[in-house]
Amino acid sequence: MFSLTAAAAGTAAAQPPGMGLDFFIMMGLMFVVFYFLLIRPQNQARKRHQEMISNIKRGDTVVTAGGIVAKVVKASEGEEVMVEIADGVQASVVKATITNVRSRTEPAEKKS
Image 1 (cartoon, one colour):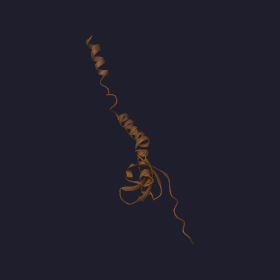
Image 2: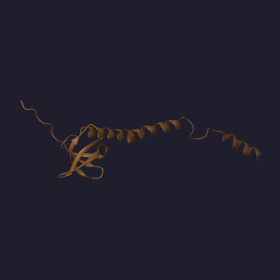
Image 3: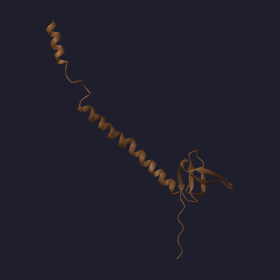
Image 4: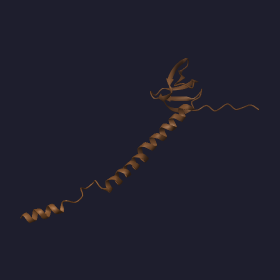
């Protein structure tokens, strides 16, 4: 009986599962998948939003995070833009809260 337990203990001395090279390969693959499915698209969306915010001009129709649709009256280089919500009703809005630019004004054509 002692010889059976000694033989069983001798075969169990193998490498513990999950701590070899396979573990590090799987972790690396998971990082690559997370990068392409989560991190990269989020960075691209942030870049597009930043570009959209920096290109806001007077006359553009914008939508804020609160759902207010307004027309840009004054766009400055700072963090805020002046928008007209209704006739004669103007408000200052932080650029970061603008979620969408619905219609863009066309640049004025030069007269020759």
